Length: 159
Image (cartoon, rainbow, N blue to C red; front, side, top):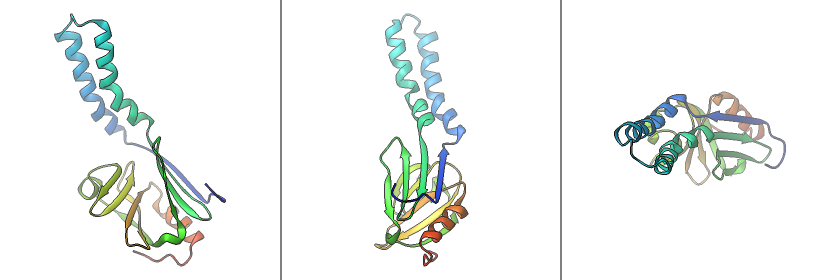
């Protein structure tokens, strides 16, 4: 980031997603352990690693959002982040959204409605950029995020 950070938020994914991602792994491992007991141990370890990979990835992922003097930065760690210069944000407002219906779930989602960065919940800040593109930043503190954006860009209007 450049400049002084005026807002920072780090979010983890919902624990229910861990359970949903872990179910296939448990089923595959149970089948291997009890139905195919003659499977060689290295094969069992390989299948266990592949089955548990989505669960470990979800444990590692987090959504980081920062606002500084010049830009908003959003990153789904460990993926590369996106920097949005404040002068490219035309409007912003807090809104409640439906993650599954509007964006197909959580994470980084590209849809006809724009791009969404969200990790949990159903509230965030809807941005409209100067080129008309829409970006939704999911947040557990959307009012504070909007206040930080308006602190750095007071002329920021509502969507």
